[in-house]
Amino acid sequence: MIKVLYFASLRERLGCGEEIIQDDPATLAELRARLATRGADWGDVFGDGQRVLAAINQEMAVADQQLRSGDEVGFFPPVTGG
Amino acid sequence: MEVEIRVQATAMDALAEIEPVFSGRSSVGGVVSFIGLMRDMNQGEEVIGMTLEHYPGMTEKALAAIVAEAGTRWELDAVRLIHRVGELRPQDPIVLVVVASAHRGEAFRACEFIIDYLKTRAPFWKREQTASGETRWVDARVSDDAAAAAWKEDA
Image (cartoon, rainbow over all chains, first blue to last red; front, side, top):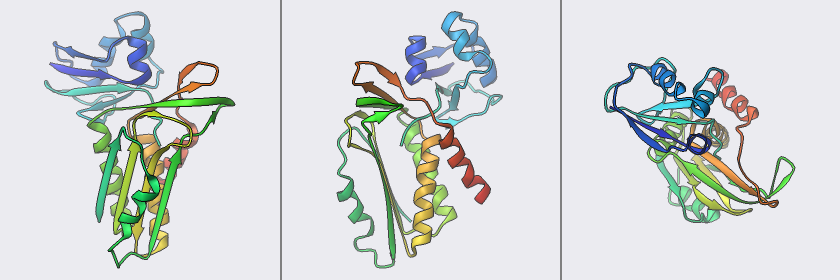
């Protein structure tokens, strides 16, 4: 089970703020690939070339990072604070 | 190094937040502060309001990591970092960075490092309301990435 959170413009575009993925993906890349198959906006957001950042358990993550059951994954656009 | 980090939805009195960072610390010889304010113009359009969203939990961790890294690079006595979330109006302080050190050089560099890293690593997102009634997410700036990357070469 992976808890997935979406923020800012991503959340609005996908119409989803939070969900639970039951069938655990092995890596972050696998999770992204799975989300990209949902069609329309999901394919655009998680397809190749899009700048979507990810965090695993609230720390910035790299594409091929491993996932474990119970992890929290956050997806978001480049940050604009300060 | 004494550290205070806050993410708050309430208004910030930036000037009042500076004095406690050095008061009573006689080893401090210099204090440098940066106050980021909401502007009334962006990309040529008048902006009347802003909403700041963040990733609760990750935000606090990211800010703590940035301040901790500054503490390993420079000799610092105290750091205070406050960031607003929620609804803002032009002139409202968005972010405050205060660094106190024995010498000015360390304080200047650490203050700039903290704001440069915050701009590219802390999960905040700005959405602005223009005078024409439009609401739009603010795009990340390439110049912010370059400013943060420059600190890597210095390391």
